[in-house]
Image (tube, rainbow, N blue to C red; front, top):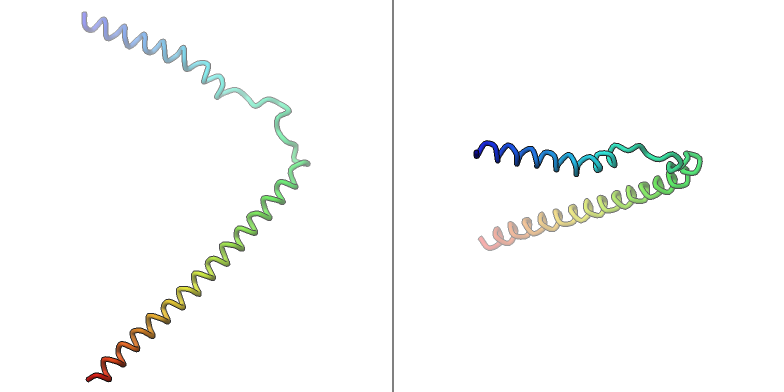
Length: 94
């Protein structure tokens, strides 16, 4: 008895999955409608704008990297100066 109810439950779930899944599969596998793609002749402006945007982003990244590098140098110099001052003051006290 138990085997029969489990088997029928599995079959009914399988049929439910097929019934619900087939319409979604048709949507996924449907081909793109003709006429919805943008022809290549009308895309250069979009491509140029994207290229300009990427160039500006790259310039901003370079500026940020330079600023971080210069700040790192400044902080390292401050640490070296403090270390040097600490050494001099300790030696002066001895």
